[in-house]
Length: 454
Image 1: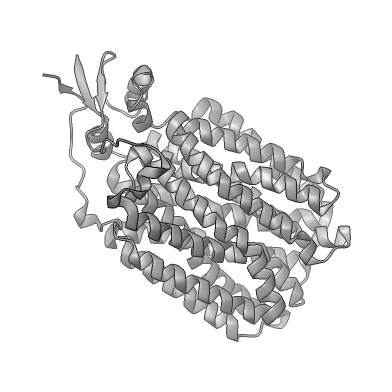
Image 2: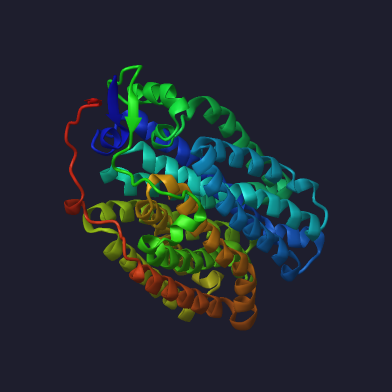
């Protein structure tokens, strides 16, 4: 009988085509997470007009979605560590797809708030499990890029929400928009049910699933015998696999600073995605153009996060993420002092792309940072709990954004964004266990798939 070190096989092996396809599958789930997360923001002006209600009447609907996502992040991380990342991810897709599909049935702000809360549970559970799956499919040296490539699909989905909203809202209205955005994740869930395997590192912890693990490793290109026994020597065995393990002395500082980083960054991100369309309509842009403003805010994040992930591999996450955060702060300051209106459309959209891009780039790479901080046994819990705590910032973002717009208009709104992003910068600087630069990460080397047991 042979013993296979799953950690050595995965961490030091190649990143083949099948692994890339698995990362792409997890990333596609997050595209639809980002789409359904931000669809309400784009539809908000149309719903306000249709229901004849002020912006403040729909603020609870935005808030309730983030409350659901806050709890969904906590619950999804624990479910992912106990029942499997695949189970948690597929469950989240189905739940938020069905509940988004039900939004056209709402006839009052209260009904809309209830549906968005329930959808938020699934939306919050998707990201920590997709990030964990991506991190555990690939070698260590590619982990930051794989996780960021997955999570960058949040702003990609947000960009898609802005684009789809700009196409559908003027022609067919907001009811059709929610129907389309609800069906897409359900179609994907049906596909992933057959195509997406469980994390190999999760399978290694469950002896009854070693047969499934052996088949998966062979699919990844490793020669594994049917009667192999599996260990994961690179991962520390923990006495506890609960949320309490995150507060052990060795993880306490990073847990607290990650909480603060996610809180202020997500507060900033969702101040943007919740209120950019409304901010632009308040500044005399038409509804269709305002929806494209959401695309501008998100699309730069796709490019910025991918570039940022590559830079992190070379320079480490500390320098890379702090530089991106500083650039976002500078962009918000420029928007806080420039005229916001249709007469200045190009400049406004360019700066929205720059600022939103860098904010999103910081936020998406934070998932790779959190996945790096925690070992396999508590990785999904660690990422999910950090994101769940950060969702408190998301819960506050509708009210903070509304207050900023009411008190200071478009320019005051961006002043608040500059301040919240500055606090995120400080919190990120305080994280101890940042991702090291590539020279500090072991390079790939051929390793045997199995070692003869003594």
